[in-house]
Amino acid sequence: MLAALLVASQVLYVANTTTFGCTSTEEVAKLQQIRAGRQAFQKELIEQVFEGQCVEITKGKVVEGAIEPSDSSILRVDRTIEPPGFVAPAHDFDKLKPGNGSKDGSK
Amino acid sequence: MKDQRSTTRTALSCAALLVLALASAIAAAQEFRDLKPSPPLVLRGEGSFFIDGYTQAIAPKYISPSAFASDAGNSMVNQMYVQYQRPQERRHGAYPLLIVHGCCLSSKSWQTTPDGRMGWDEYFVRRGFDTYLAEQVSRGRSGFNALQYQMVLVGDAPATSNPPILIATDAFAWNVFRWGNFSTLTPFADEQFPMNTVGVGPGSTLTFYNQVIPDLNSTLPNVPAGCADGTCTPRDPNAVYSTPAAMAQLANDLNGAILMGHSQSSGYPTMAALQPGSSGVRGIVQLETGCFGNLTAADIDILKNIPILILVADHFSTPQPSATCVAQMQQINSAGGDMTFISLPAIGIHGNSHMMMLDHNNLQVADVIINWIDQHVKSNDDSGSDDSEVRSDTNRR
Figure 1 (tube, rainbow over the protein chains, first blue to last red):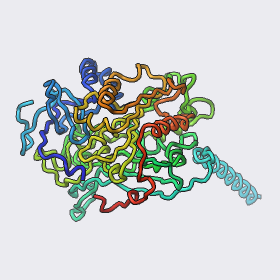
Figure 2 (spheres, rainbow over the protein chains, first blue to last red):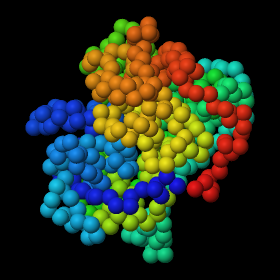
Figure 3 (cartoon, chains in turn brown, red):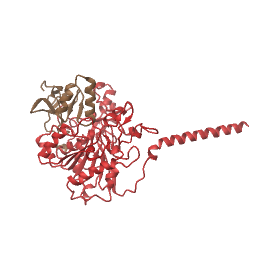
Figure 4 (cartoon, chains in turn red, brown):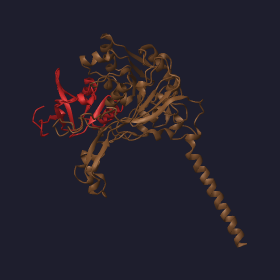
């Protein structure tokens, strides 16, 4: 019943790299800051995943999403499936063309 | 003489085997032997069921290497297992509790502690709450989707496309559960976790680690079933495919429930309350910590009507509440909502770990939650009726 209300017109994105989504833009900014340091980044991310503040999104995973109106660098993913969803770095995703699932070249 | 020596040797061998068998039985029965006695528990109902997942067509080559074409069919995936107990003597006006475990764990988190004491599930029942334990979709007795791994096995997908499985180690547990210093196996001086179940001290065991299991959450779809190819036409529009969605479904079915999540699932009650069509969430308990810094005005409009408790334990290395929790509390409470933060040390309860439900004083911590429920969650006027509680595995949608 609940899920029947879902998904009339989702916009789908595919992760072009292994990335993450979090429940706050502050955590996204923190992870972005340390992303170059693989070990520190992985440690922080795994702890945040463990504690439910972030999720890991593997390369190639399809998510539904929308660019945040107030910040075009942020994509809000999984709002439909796990509201309020997670905020993620928008440049880590490519928009899929409706119908055939190929990338449409836009963010 | 020969026969006598032979008989003696045989007897000695048998005795040795018996000793070995007994020693082995003692070792195997240790957890059971450790169980503490408790008075009779009187129930008016007990059982288990699934919140439906969805069916997925499976080609023979993905079933197993020895499968025949005639085996092709449908397989149920991502269903959520729930078990419940309903006490004979119900707490006046109490809504049922629906409890979900955290990362790398199962419903066992809420049951008998690793050192054999009463768990929260039994305690909440004894305190008069209908208590439902759900296993996260893709964990424990709930279903998960193995198709991707089979596709890799037969060469239809690259190995790199397999979703990662989260495996928690003992070092990870010491760090995240805040027990103390792993490198020296030195707990905090006031540590409340039963450290003798994680290898600390003479005669200790590793019993707790039996509870830690692989986490397959990354196998869950991020879009509804049938929508991953970009067509956005779910084959089964009734599919429930995530733990929060299943929790919302169950809260609706129960005509109201208090949802409690821990750690990884601490945000799930909020996610459940925000699901489309969700109307059954009457209270939210977030155990370490589950706050959201990305709520919309529409989200706040829903959450302001649901009392929310954030409960944290001791030995955090960062200040509590977190900035995200502070921001959410300000949003909710300034909108007229009721969001409470309780730090156990701040109310005089010290030494608790991230796994407070298993700590030595676990029942004292449970009482903190029950007191909050009594003070903040509106009374369930229908608590005298059982009509809403009869459950079946079929025809629930």
